[in-house]
Image (cartoon, rainbow, N blue to C red):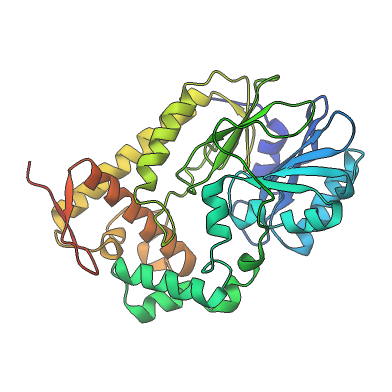
Length: 349
């Protein structure tokens, strides 16, 4: 792998926001900060359109700080939020979709995403903070959490209120569709895993590949089960990685961290990471048979001691563990007891 976003990489090391950069004629990257988030910022990509106006890929977190940064970035490239004609969303997470409604209200722009993510964002549970809490708590209990422990990690309904107001799309993009951004050929590439409807975008004139959160240069994106997701998100993610890795692209433009070259090498690294994780989890199942995902997560290697995990970090860890268990089951390596709270044992081979 080769780092091509050197200014982004240097800013990351200095723990500061990177600059707005012109990447190609009529294409810019705009960093939009994520308040209090370890990923620090999401990169919004701005495209100047034939006939005037701008297109955006992802918008950033919904906050005043982020809104100010996005507007300032558009001003820096000689535009304004009112010039935006269309917004492509790689996936439904708040740091990508959060500001889309403000952009639409300010500019009249359309918003587009994959139908699978649109269905989640528009679901009655997602639009109701109290229902979202109930659904997530129930899901964690089904993975082995005690109800009070699950409720403490999920938190109050008020925390879910911002997510319940995220933009619903005006347009849907399926795999292979070309976005309506005149002067560019941005073809949607459905890459499920991080979310059911995650999209990358292949720009066919320049060869650039906008990878969203599907392929990042340093970290492995979280691949988790959810109460409203797909049954085997990790299996779908690995299949998507394999397909994407076959592409010969001059540069990858991810949503976080920095631009890079070497898509095939990076997808291979990510696949190897998950195979190691699957092997570690299988060993844990063999050592502690009849364990729940909640229990097994505490037996795995994490970036810090398990005792320090709580709230959203623990939820991500447990649901990521569950995603790995489901893939082991699909491969015939573990079996579930079934029931309200499944317990896992190694399959007899």
